Each structure stands twice: as structure tokens, then as C-alpha cells.
Amino acid sequence: MEPLKQTKEVTRRNFMSGSTGTAAAAAAGFQIVRPGTLRGQIKEKMTVGLVGCGGRGTRGVAEAVRGNPNYELKAMGDIFEDQLEKSLRRLRDSDEFEPAVRKQIQVDPENRYIGFDAYKKVIDSGVDIVFLHTPPGWRPLHFEYAVNAGKHIFAEKPLATDCMGAQKMIRLAKESEAKKLTVMIGAQRRSQKEYVDSVKRIQDGEIGDVVATYANWVSGPVIKGADFEEKLEAETLAWQQRAWYSHVWICGDQIVEQHLHNIDVINWVMGDTHPVSVVASGGAIWRPQEKLYGNIYDHVYADFVYANGVRLTSHCRQYPERKVRRVNELVVGTRGRSTVRDLGAPSKTSPYVQEHIDMLASIQGSGPYQNRALAVAYSTMTAIMGRESAYSGLEITWDMVMNSKQNLIPDNPSLNKTFDVPPLPRPGEYEFI
Image (cartoon, rainbow, N blue to C red):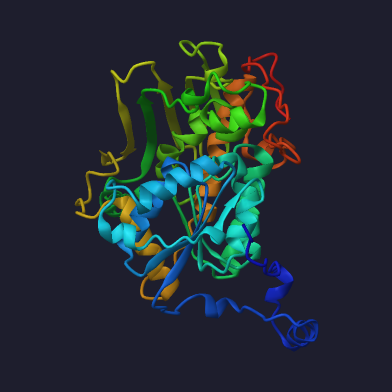
């Protein structure tokens, strides 16, 4: 297959303002993309490129085109060819999604890219919007390329799995704001009307001053890669990519990958800030020490403290069977309490669809500007703080994670390359970097 010609990478220098920058860019033959032109343009068709064609990416495309009839999926990329083709068949050829969705899937063979560099080819293919749906360990790398290319971005949460990745995402979030890029993150509660209304009323003082907060995600396990258990070796990158939810470097552990939703709600209530310290505990009680289950915990309990002294009691737990489910938040004030849903009215529109409606309105200028990257980057780092405290047995501060040199992502990845699986973290043995 013949890939499309790659476009030049857009860097911060391409966005210079002033006569000197204009003259230099013109002399070099570059076209300046000014921040003001990235919003307010209404196009008959908005083209989308999907990076990461798993179940969440496939459903994400369907939700996006349901909310925006002028969207067209034009390019797809994944490490695995079978995963890309399965996603395309589900979207375009099956009865799983309605005809209106299938009609908006227009991915020609030359716009299907395979391999670790597929994200570059999708982003360089000329699409207007990039959807980043790979496992989260790769998010900072892909997000950086998309921001440099001046693309509007929808990115799944979390935004990183290690400290240096989260540091990079905080920096890139600020750069994307400076470029006026629309960035929507898959923290769909921020587009869910009950939450939006409730957060506003809490922040307006309806329950008084906030004095304590609680967040829970207690449910069954998430197991990926079971279909490939006998086909691949646990040490290869290919196996770990398939079984991504079981490996810290690529999923971040439950507190980062899943419980981030609840932590993000509390950070949002607190003014899109973050805690300053945490003490946490955790471990793996029921998860077997077998390759399918990797090296993540099945429970973490964390006590976060914000700068104003308010605490967040955070509890995430996975049980081997889905007999218990408690996924919620609670905010206690001096004059009452709120579940952060009870002060608002529900909407008939799914928040998974609404976030894409809000995104297009931001791009076209018909609604408020949306860039949620920084807020969710803070929440990602908050969750990483909790994990690192549970793993190490230390009190972890915001300053510690913002200065950490922890980098879990492999250099020069290859599917057949051996990538050692570290043992399950044990406090006293595990070293915070």
C-alpha cells in the first residue's frame, strides 16, 4: 500500500507572530497557521483520523459521528492490522451501528496505517481532527505530534502512565491552549449535564464551603488479551500491548486508568486544581501472579490533601466477580452534601455523544472554546501520585512527581522485542524515582 505523502511537522516556531516571524517563514516556504484561524471555520465536512482501533476507539468514532453528521472518518492507524480491520468492519459493514454511522466511515485502503509510526501517518494525512485512543502509555508521544501538527484533538483518558509523561502532558496542554486548539478528553462526566450543573452549584456555594470529598470505583476487573494468552510470550511487547490493562507501563494501574474519572470530578469541584500530597496503600489480593494479570494492583486506598486542607478519600478496588459496584463521588460542605449529580437535571443525550457535540461547537466557534487537556493532565498526575505512594509506602507530594525522572515507556519499540515485566511493586522494595 502506498502511504500518503507526509506533511511538514508544525512546531512552535511555525506559530511566530510579528513581521520578523512572518518574513522568516515566508522565506523558508512555510505557511503560517495562526491561532485565530483554527476556530470559527465551518466546513461542510470535518475529517477525522483515528489512532488506536480497539473497542474504545471504535465506539468513540460511532459516538462522535452520531453527534456530528458532518464528520467523516478518513484515516485509521493501529499497531496491529487485525485490530484495525476488525474495527473497520464493525463501523462500516456490521449491523452493530445504525446506517447513519456506517455512511460516515470513508476510509480508503491507502489511509489505513499499521505499525508504531501509524500515528504519524494518520496525523499527516490531512484530517481536521485526530482521535487518540491507544492504550494510555503512548498518549504523550501521540499528543505531542498532533499538537505540533496543529490538529484539534480528542484524546482518551488518562493522559500518561508515568511522571515524565504527565509532566510532558501538562506542558503540551498549555501549548495547545496557546495555539487555540480545541482539545476534548474522554472524561465524559465533564459533558454530563447532571455533573455540569451540580459542580456549578457547589462552586457557587449551595452546600457551603467544601470540607471533605470522597471518590470510589469499586467493581469487577478489566482483563485484556485473554484471547491471545496461549499465542504470545509475556515478555514480548506484542503480548503486553494486547494485554495492556495488566501492565503498569502501558495502563498506569486501576487508579490511573479507571479511577481517574472520579478523581477528576473532585479536582474539578475543587476548581480544576490538584492535591499537594498523598499517603496511600494497596496491593494485589485476588489477582493471580500469572502472565495474563501482569503487575498491577487490584486495590488502592488513598488519602489526598489539597492546599486548603480539604481531603479526598479515594478508594478503587477490583473484585474477581462483579458482585459489588460502587462508582461515585461525594462532596461534603458546611451546609450540606452532594453526590455531584443530585443538583442537576439529566439530559437525554449521552455524555459520550455530548462531548463530541461540544467539541465541534468549539472548533466552529458556535459554542464556548473547549480545551480540557490541562485539567485532565492534572488529574492524571494526581492518580499517578496515589499509585506511587501505594507502591513505595511513602508520602508523595506534587513537587516530588513534578520533578521525578520516572519514564516507563520503551525506547525504539518493536513487537517482537523482549520487554521485561517488573515484579509486583512491594513497599520497602519499590523505589520512587
